[in-house]
Image 1 (cartoon, one colour):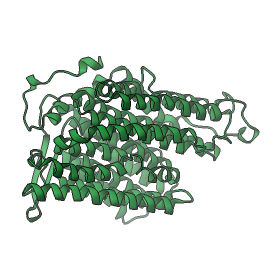
Image 2 (cartoon, one colour; image 1 turned 135 degrees about the vertical axis):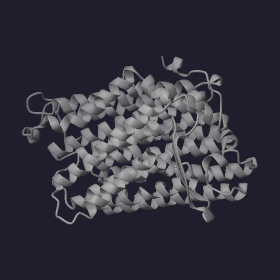
Image 3 (cartoon, rainbow, N blue to C red; image 1 turned 180 degrees about the vertical axis):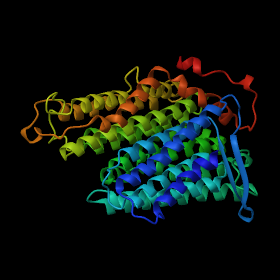
Image 4 (cartoon, helix red, strand yellow; image 1 turned 90 degrees about the horizontal axis):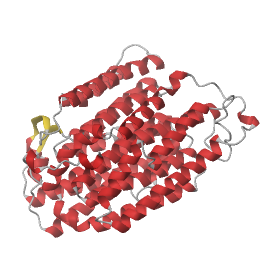
Length: 501
C-alpha cells in the first residue's frame, strides 16, 4: 500500500514522458489528474484501515537494499504522517486541476508535478534516515524546474536561489544523520534503532543544531527565509499551492519526527532558544507582510509567520503541543493553498497583483464578488477567527505553549493579531472602494474555476467545527513520541481530545 503511494505517481510521470504519440496539454492534464485521483482514493482507503490506537508504525515495509551502507527500504505510517499524506494528495490534485490547459511543454510539466508528489510522499513515509534524506533531496529537482521554466520574469534567479538554499539544507541534514549513526556505533539508519542512541548531551546538541539549521531553511525560519518570497512571486499558482501547502511541511515534519524523536534530551536543553526564535520569526514575518504591495508576497510572508507557530509548539514538547503542531501544519496547508489560488485567480482575470492598482473587486456587477468573499473567508481563517480551522490550530498552539513559554507565546499572539491587520489592509485596498475604469471589463469567472477554492473553504469550515476528525489521528502517537519508547500501553495515554472539545 505505501509503496503504491510512492511509486504510482512515478509510473504516471513515466507514462507521460515516454508516450510515443504527441499529447495535447489538456490531455496531459487529464491523465495526470487521473493518476492523482487514484492516489487520493488510495490515501482514503489507507486512512480508513488505519487504527489510531495502535501505537506503532502501520502498513510497514522493510526490504534490505544497500546493506553495506546500512540503507534499507523502510516505510511506515503513523498518526504524525497520515494527516500530511492526506494534505499532499489533496493539494496535488488541486494544483493539477488549477494548471493551465494550454501550458507549454505539458508532458514535462505534469511529469514533474507527479514526481514532486512522489518525493514528498516518500519523505513522509520513510522510516530510514538515509531514505528520508533521499526523498528530501529528490523533491528539489522537480520544483527547481517548475520555477525555472514556468515561472515569472525573474524565474531563473528565484529557482537558483531556491536550489542553493535547499542544497545547503540537505547537506546539514545529511551531516547530522551521518554523525548520529557514526557516533552511536549503529549499523543502520533505521529510525527506531536510533531513538535510544545514548550519546552524550553535548554531542546530541551539536548534531541537533546542524539538523535544526538544515530544517529551518526548509520551513523557513528567520533568518533563513529569504528564498521563499522570491520563489513564491516567480512560481505559477499551482506551484505556489504545493510549495506553501506541502513542501514547507517537510521541514516542520522533520523537526518533530527527527528533532524531538531522536534528540529528546538535547531538544529539552535548546527549547527556550527555539521558542524565542519562533517568536522573532512570527513577528518578523507579520511585520514584513504589512509592508508588501504584491498580494503574493503578503501571503508568502504570512507563511513565514504561521510556520513559526509550529516551531513554538514543537519547542513546548508536550503531548498537546505536538498535536497542535500537526494541526497547525494541516490547517496552514489548506488556508495558504486557498489564499494562493485566489490570488492567482485575481491575477489571471486582472493581470495584476499590485494592491495599489487593484480597487473595488467586490463590486457585484462588474467585479469578482464571490472570489472576494472567499478571500475574506480565507483571511479570517488565517487570522484565527473562531469557527474556522485556523482558530483551533492557533488555540491549541498557544494553549499548549503558554504555561512553558509565556513571553514567547504572547509575542506569537501579537503576530497572530497582526495577521488580521495585513490581510485587512490587503482586502480593503483590493476588494473595497469604487471599481476603477481600468478594471471595468474583468473576464467572467466560471463555476469550474471556483471548485478548488470552494473545496478548501468547505474543509476549513468543517475542521473548524469538527477538529476531532483531525486531532484523533495524532493524539496517541504524540505521547509515544515524547516517551521515546517503541511500545507503550494504551492505558497510559490520557485523551487530549477533551481539551479540543
